[in-house]
Amino acid sequence: MAKNYDQLAKTIIKDVGGKDNVNSVVHCTTRLRFKLKDESKTNDDALKNTDGIVTVVKNAGQY
Picture 1 (tube, one colour):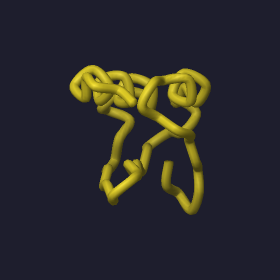
Picture 2: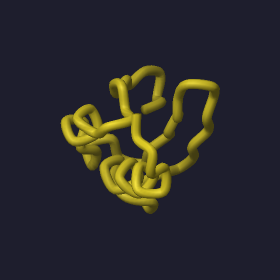
Picture 3: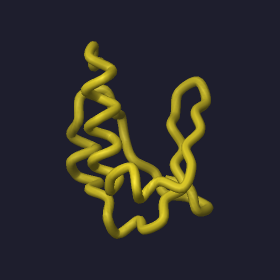
């Protein structure tokens, strides 16, 4: 699991299309739930291969 959460957060924001692509984000115990302006701007493969991220799920308008 990633130890540098600041770097992990920056990587996640970059790979979901940047902060300007995020409408909202909430978290629960094990997940970050993004509502994005444009899901085509995401880099799913990069996120899935990032230490500290288990997988990427798109469902019901949430990423």
